[in-house]
Length: 111
Length: 115
Image (cartoon, rainbow over all chains, first blue to last red; front, side, top):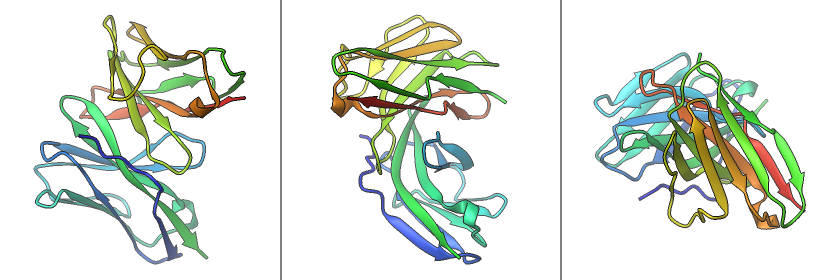
């Protein structure tokens, strides 16, 4: 089945604080996951990815955690900046190539 | 890097008319193109998968006769919204696997408004 994201939840954090955005995915057979950032009126922008043989991956200011047992992904953003304000989506690769998006979260950074 | 160029970026059309959206891969060959639709404050919903030289595969609930997809070359996929109605107003985005380490590249999206 496909994950469906409706009525985006929101997360507000203070500038400089860390943010944690969560996502549940649907297909236990999915082997690759991506976090995207989307700004208003634009296409998704790649942030970080992780394969199912890993449970953690770090990038610059971002960390993705994968819990396959409960089909859960999280994105941690360290020291959030105003430019981090956007909608964040997780996506899972289902089958050979199909990329299905999960629930999004609107992140707002308060000054 | 791999780039997909999507046009137009926005379009306004009258009810009953058809609108064509193009996605071109600029520096790689896109044998597959995914088409998504995104309503305000919602996630990207996969509509269909186009494959060069073959029929597109539509997701459940998506009308193939309304959303015509053509993928006639390795660098061009098109989505035509036929007999558009106001409820078709949405943000349409294409995406292609780049063939590099599971990567995907996205078009910049098309804002369709049907009046």
